[in-house]
Image 1 (cartoon, rainbow, N blue to C red):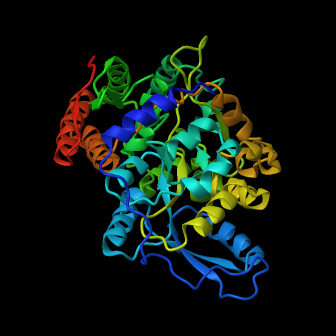
Image 2: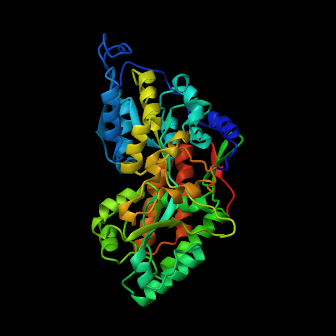
Image 3: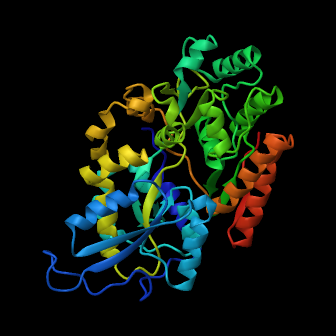
Length: 445
């Protein structure tokens, strides 16, 4: 993978973030003192873990069976963007947060700015070499580590093989120009059918921008730069606006029942989404099993393919955790243990951040829903062509909410994407300044 300059970015972030996080307190997940190594003697340490991803509870069960001295309780919350993060932050403020939380890379800087993370550098540093370097950079801010990486999220095209053939598409579109041409072909043949859907998921849109070389956040000296309107962002917005203006895309909300109903009935033929969406799609349109396949996401330049990344998450340790060492031990195990990874690959649909996980047999398994295809091969081939210098900002909870709202308006009321991005940038700058962060508009298109 191509990497950025993490040491420079980390140094900048160190000066830009709000005050250093406080150390342990007596609040958080409790339990008695740490048990003996064999699980006898002292009472077991008990850790609470909040998250929403399918399969996490099964990895927790595997851990608990093998580690009687440290027992983890997984509590399923709403997804981060639908209230999970707000619940976590509120719990930190109240002094009753869990020790462990599922937190996306994009949201960790926001948690850090809010003082909601526990510094576990002393316990985590030894594991750094077990992970792709750029993913470790995602959980490290200003030289201090606040959790353990779980996965990355390369994007691909999930499509109906049978319906592509029906409408005369002989191969999945390789470029975005081909995607637009195929969208026109399908919709001309049947105006009630669409090649794809333009949803309102801000992070999916971020993956499209990421692919094109856009930069939403950066740093210059001691100041944040926000650049949602640079040339690369304008390129992406103009492309998708063109398809919307021609009414070549369905506009069901992302992950809404209406979207899966349209996919199941053959009204939407494909989805550009992350690796973790492959099991979600499979469970949402079960009756179409065997008819789907996975291809690389379309690119801007076939001679120089670059792909996008939509997500990636960490197991973060929250401020107030009474047992940060044990919490970090569990987080490392969940991301590296072969049994845990096999479960997370199969059920959660992760692409592991741990380098050893890339040889896990589950990544080589044939997937019946996708016609027996070895779907992870597609994502493996893409990972070497993802720009890993993308940087998230410290207000992504607010930024993503505003962008999601704007994307929804582009679907329903004709708002122009370039204007949406401009408005989101203005709101983001205002929010950053309200939090006491130095910020300015970066290069614009």
